[in-house]
Image (cartoon, rainbow over all chains, first blue to last red; front, side, top):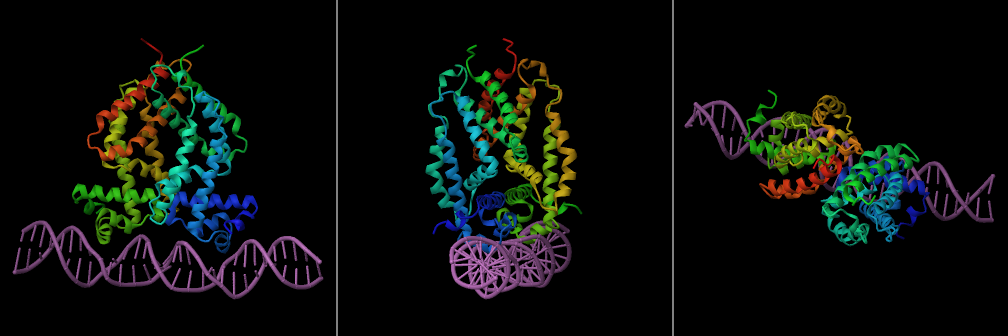
Length: 207
Length: 207
DNA sequence: AATAAATTGACCACATTGGTCATTTTTGGT
DNA sequence: ACCAAAAATGACCAATGTGGTCAATTTATT
């Protein structure tokens, strides 16, 4: 049972279907997301979709579980012994980048689930998300060496600025990511410059 | 003709209708936005809505024009003689805050129009937006004194970081804005701290 | 009280919905 | 080359929702 039908598909097809579905759910929310549009975009037939998944709700929660699994993998890969904030963030940013290439809408999808209002899924979402996501997120800043910060810098606010900069940068680069294949290098170089600027701003100068 | 029916309504009612409509359009996009949901949220009858506006498309473009008018007012108020970037941004941030209180979704709505894919409105949107918005936006950074920047700081990247921080801060404070009435003071104080941090980061120390 | 203006919601033809299932196509073993 | 099993298809369905109308009712003005 479970999702064996879907999992025995060629993985390219699986990805195509998942991305098409995530796109719809992000764009329209759970209720208004159209299975007709999903199958059109994924280039499969209606019958197939409902052969892989019992119904729309099943598909939706499969996507959530899959996304959470992937996010967990990211945070599991974090090298917790690296105590420098900026190097830690570089790690995560790089892993995220790889994921964005395969599932461009994964993070948007996860975000959209938390704004979901539909009573048919809201409660279930809340109970799933509550535990997992916060635990993972806290690992990002675990064991960071805050003594490197200048005394007149509020670390919490510095983290916010860093976060917002990361989000903004990622958003701005999204189209470029999709078009290029191995855009990694020059992108990371640009990101490095932003990091350098903020490092100089927040860290003690240690020459 | 035009929108005289709508404009002769009590302004509270006008605002209620516009916010309800913007909410739908942001949430669901032009095509899937439901006029039924709009009238329910705005607490008016279906007949009234179509008395004020000829049809859904009319309503949509009325909202766009109105939003653009408001945005233009913001940028018209910018004191162009203030050459310090941070003070300039403070001005704009403060004006924006006032608008967010009356129309919490105005900026989200404008953003959503530019992502709109529906062929029924896409071209028209493009032709309206093209001119106006970019012109206004460029005024924000007009006549700024870039000589205050440290030599090793790339001004363009600094502007990006500032922008992303502003967006992130605004997003984070959105709920608080709605609930409080005159939240302005403590909010601006917190924002000031972020500004101070980034100022110290990007400006020459002039002690 | 009479008239005009504003508001209502039942109603319409039509489009789209999530989901089914008989039929066709593809697959893999012999 | 053949066939049976598996996979994929899309016409089809009842149900719901759509943007928009308009005769009837309520409210405001004279």
